[in-house]
Each structure stands twice: as C-alpha cells, then as structure tokens.
Amino acid sequence: MDTPASKGSQDEYRNAEGILRVVREGLCHRCGACVGVCPDNTFALRDGYPVVVGDCSQCNLCVEVCSGLEVDYPYLGREVYGERGYEFGSLTGPVRSVWVAHAADAAVRELGGSGGVVTAMLLHWMRTGRVQGAIVTVDDPTEPARAAGRIARTEADVLRGARSRYTTAPTLAVLREIRDEPGPFVLVGLPCHVHALRMLQIRKPQWRERIPFVVGLFCHYALPWEGVRLAGETFAPRGARLVSVGYRDKHSAQWPNNSARFTYDDGSEWRSPLTAPATFNVLSRLVPLGRCLMCADACSEFSDLAVGDPWIRGPDGRWKFRDPRGHSMVIVHTAQGEEWWQKLMEERVVVAVPVELDEATQRGHDSMLREKKERVGFRLRWRKRLGRAVPRYPGIQFPRPSRISMKEEFGFLLTRLLAWSSWWQRIALRVAFSRWGVAWVNWRRRRRRARPTSVPLNPTRP
Ligand SMILES: Cc1cc2nc3c(=O)[nH]c(=O)nc-3n(C[C@H](O)[C@H](O)[C@H](O)COP(=O)(O)OP(=O)(O)OC[C@H]3O[C@@H](n4cnc5c(N)ncnc54)[C@H](O)[C@@H]3O)c2cc1C
Ligand code: SF4
Ligand code: SF4
Ligand code: SF4
Image (tube, rainbow, N blue to C red):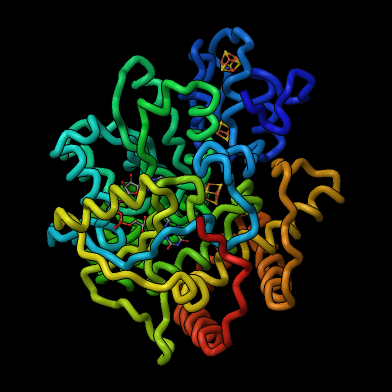
C-alpha cells in the first residue's frame, strides 16, 4: 500500500503519547478523530481535547488519522482524485462545477444557516434510503458555547444539526458509535474533519463503504468555545448565566445579516449589531485561534462537494445574492459529488444556478482563500524559525504571499495582541461592539470592499 510521507515507526509522535504531544504542542484542532477511531477506547474528551482514560495497545491509528499533526495533500489526493492525484496550489482544490443554491422546501431553507442545502440533502438521502444516517454537529447539551457530534438517524436529528456553529466541534468522536455498523452514512464536516476521515478510509478501507459520501463545509476558522463563552459572559447582564448561543440567528435578522445571539437564564438576549461575517471577523481577532491559523484548506478540498455562503459582490459592491431567505454556495469536487448533486437538482430537492469559479473566488472568498494558502505558508515558516511545532504538509510548497496578503497579515497579527489576556479581551469586546466600534468596523469593511481584488492562484480543474 502507498504509505504517507511521514508517521513511520521512527516518528516522534506515536500512539496515545503522540496524541498527547499533539495537544501539548498546540497542534490539536479538536476534531475528535483520535477518540472516535481508537479500538481500545483509550481516550475521552475533556473540553474537546483527548485525554487518556484507558490502556493503549499501540496500534498508532490515532496518530495516523490526526489531521492536526499532518495533512498529506498528495497522499489524500490519490485517495480522493485517483492516480492523477491532487495538485496543491489552487485556492479551492479541484472543481467540477460551482453553484449558488437553496433548499426547495421553504421551511428547510429557513432553518439552514445559509440556504439550507446541507439539511435538504441529508433529509432527502435519508428519506430515499440512500444513506442510513448522517454524522452531523449539534449544540453540546452540556455547554452552550460548544458543539458536539451526533449520528443522525432520524429527520429530527438532522434538523437539530441545521445551522453553523462557528466553534470547536469534536464531531468525529461519534465514529465510535458506528464502528460495527455497515452504513452507509454521510459525513458533514469541516475540512479538518474531512482530512481525518480520508486518512481513516485509507488505513481501514471498510470505512470507505461505511461513509461513502462526504459533504464538506467551507471554513475560515472555528472560534475556540472558551472564547465564545467569554464573549457571552462579557455581554451578560449582572448575575445572568449564558444558556444558549445562536451563531447564525435567522429569527433576529434575515440572511445575509443574520448574526450571533447570546441568550441568558434571566430571559434576556444580546444580539450582535454587526452582520455574521463582521461579527466573526471581530471575534477571530480577540480570541486565540490556535491550530486554525495553520490550516490551509478553505473549501474542504477532499470532500465530494463543499458548501459555504455565496459571498459574491456585484459591480455595485453589494452582495449579489441577498435574498433574506438565504443561499448556499456549492463547489462540487469529485465525479461522485457531481452525480449526487445532479440528482438533487433533478429530483427538485434544491434549486440551483451555476456560477463561474472565478467570480466565486475573486469577487467573494478571495481574501479568505488567499489567507489559507499564502499567509498560512508565511506563518508556518515563522513558527518553525521560532522553534515552535507546526503541522506537517509533506510534498507541498506554499506560494510566496503577495504584497496585499502581507499587509493583511501584519494588520491581523497586530490585532491579535488583544487576545493575550482575558482582561484585554473583555475590554476589546466591549469597545468593538460599542456604537463607535461598530461604526469603525463598518467603515473599514466599506473601504476594503472598494479595493480591487487580486489575481487568483492557478485554480486546477480535473
Ligand atoms: C466553523 C465553521 C466555519 C465556516 N466558515 C465559513 C466561511 O469562512 N465561509 C463560508 O462561506 N462558509 C463558512 N462556513 C459554512 C457556512 O456557515 C454554512 O455551514 C454552509 O454555507 C452550509 O449552509 P447550509 O444552510 O447549506 O447548511 P445547513 O442546512 O444549515 O446545515 C449545516 C450543517 O453544518 C453542520 N455543522 C454545523 N456546525 C458545524 C461545525 N462546527 N463543524 C462541523 N459541522 C457543522 C451541521 O451538522 C449541519 O448539518 C463555516 C461553517 C462552520 C461550521
Ligand atoms: S490503541 Fe491505537 S488508536 Fe488507541 S490510543 Fe493506542 S495507538 Fe492510539
Ligand atoms: S487534531 Fe483531532 S485527532 Fe488530532 S489530537 Fe486533536 S482531536 Fe485528536
Ligand atoms: S480552520 Fe481548519 S483546523 Fe480550524 S476548524 Fe476550520 S478546517 Fe478545522
């Protein structure tokens, strides 16, 4: 069998100890995979991180699937895209088609974080018996700011998963529950979830049949749940406790302006005065993002198809898709993804229009995509120079950042100084969401919008 470029028997990361080292060195993004795959149930989750609670028979599977430690693009590329493999260097990964879509069912569209496309797909595949269940992410019942994995076996379970939780999601810990089931299941996951699953499918081919279909989400970063809780506490009325977080709350404002809402045990609410992208951009400056700052995958490049928001600006600088009921953007990566997506359109589960890849990247996600490829490469080089641990990306060369990217990176690094202590974070949160802070953030966003976008890196098509 083809072997990964690293993780051999001489590797310094081995077995349960290796996983604890990944956590110690700040490389863990809390995907839960090590917990979910371990045949001995050696790990449990504490605050989303794996902790050892049992014996380890030293099979090394947990380390082999750990995408916090390594993402081997060429190796995963051969698994998903065949012998032609995968060429690192495009902003989005291989692309067959790009769509802006929404769930045909108005109620499902309303429930979704964007256009409800993911929930509509899952409901349809379950109703038609194409899959037996879905691995989704729901609110963690034990901690309002946190998310948790769930094997959705009923429509009610799928509906519980609808909407994005922009936070730590050790979703793959639930793989443990389906280890002895034939499936088929579908996974909905962030790029880091998808990397871990693909590695598992290579190491244990029975997982290919068990989870034959993978729906990815776009991902800029996931806020650490501790940071979300801190924000919730900062805006709490005196003596009140945070009881729920609505990350994308379509009830308080319609898409694309739906944004964060904190609810407290005295019945009161705090609603972000900024739109979702602005709110999460502010929060991302004020809380430590850890491993997410070293992540190079924005569009779930190894999923069958990936879903995000259609952040595309028209020539007037306004969002091109701004129907308040919501829209999702779909990038179809694989041949299987194309086949399933075509069926969803034919069977009128989703309503979709094609869009040009260049439009989606250059007039929409450009800055996020560039951050993932160019600025991440810069960060990795610097962390290495400073003797800090970095994730491994064997066999790939990160492109040199453009001048625009470097300017953005320095601005970003400066604002990150605010994340140093919770005392600073609280003050910065109060200032950022005050009347003046909101006016400043909106002014900055308008100015940025007026700036021309840059030329994309060489997108690849299979
Ligand atoms: C952490 C995070 C970051 C994201 N960043 C971006 C971005 O930068 N740009 C962009 O365009 N889109 C981003 N998205 C995707 C976007 O928010 C929507 O999830 C996507 O458009 C699908 O919308 P929908 O209405 O079709 O899905 P819905 O029908 O609302 O279904 C959402 C699905 O997402 C799953 N889910 C929710 N939270 C998580 C989680 N934390 N981890 C794994 N799965 C989860 C649920 O299981 C559910 O099945 C992000 C999503 C998340 C969770
Ligand atoms: S038994 Fe295998 S998967 Fe479990 S902790 Fe040990 S090495 Fe990791
Ligand atoms: S990144 Fe995932 S697999 Fe790796 S240690 Fe963290 S939870 Fe485990
Ligand atoms: S940025 Fe990367 S590591 Fe962080 S949650 Fe998103 S996919 Fe995972």
